[in-house]
Length: 232
Image (cartoon, rainbow, N blue to C red; front, side):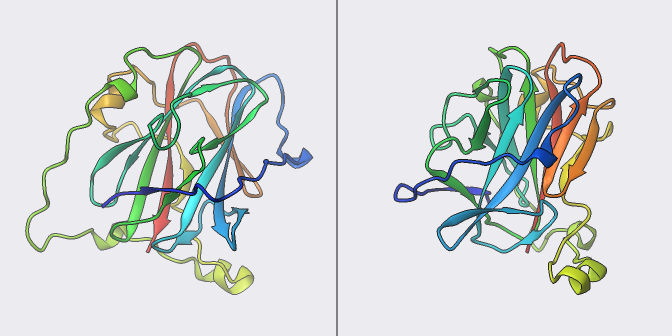
């Protein structure tokens, strides 16, 4: 199934507010990413390692300290690849300006959690220059249908951290959230064709509910990392 997009035409989207705690050293190239959930008609910042329920509506906030272009693709729990951003539903303008905060989707829309329980793998590609042969221009092939009776492996199912649940009352999974792409991990063909490199030298820092992806040196080409979204 898919990590669907639901249009929220009647919803007034709230401006994002940045806290001083989210600031990082200016000498590095960095990207700040947060996750929001729609609760009672308002967007609220949530822990990126939460295990979400089917039907919940989510969006991301994104900020960089450099100009560039952003591309986002999802691999659903059923194995289907889908271009999330840029797209007709989520917005076509994917240029990001240093210091300005954006929402993904960039329209009055939200991502809706759907499909079998497991991990949605959301690939983020950011490039200092526009990729004319980028993911949006590539055809995303459908994966082969699973064999009859074949389902997700138990090892790939989200698991609630009992200690965190007892302390905070929240069901979280440490395997979720922003991650680097492992060397052996196969990425969608449309992403590997862009020449995006896997972030061996990037740092992933958690500051409360904000993830900071930082590079100690200036980016000279596109890079790829992923957000693993757990849901039941």
